[in-house]
Amino acid sequence: MGLFTTKEVGIEKIKVIGNSNMVLSRLQGNFTVKEATLAPYRTATERLVNSFKQVVLEHIPGVTNTYVDALATLGSKLSFVKEQPNITVIKKDMPAVEAMPQDEPIDESD
Image (cartoon, rainbow, N blue to C red; front, side, top):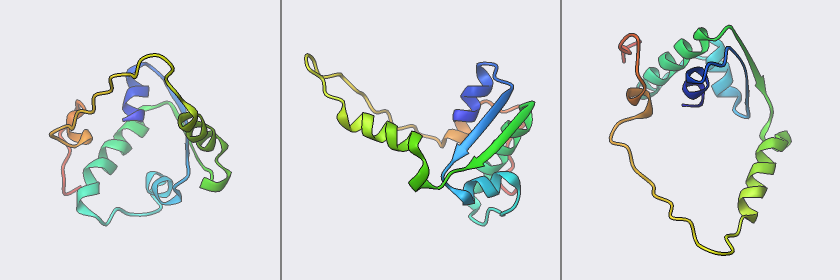
């Protein structure tokens, strides 16, 4: 969904930083997707990645990912002094990959 949103706002060059070497390797085509339910996500992601002018994939091990650590720390320190926010969680009835508009239908056997 992050790639989709980035493309929607007109970004042409992107750097993807991830702490999952497996996910990044799949994006680079080094690993195959064996789980059938993940195939549509891989296909949608490949199409999105190929739609950018430039994509840089960078693996940062979780223990050295200071950005994630900083966000987690910040989130744990938030306190609401006045009014508690009204946060609604809506469970979608379909997977995210099916909710995104597609130029071509995603073949689940791909």
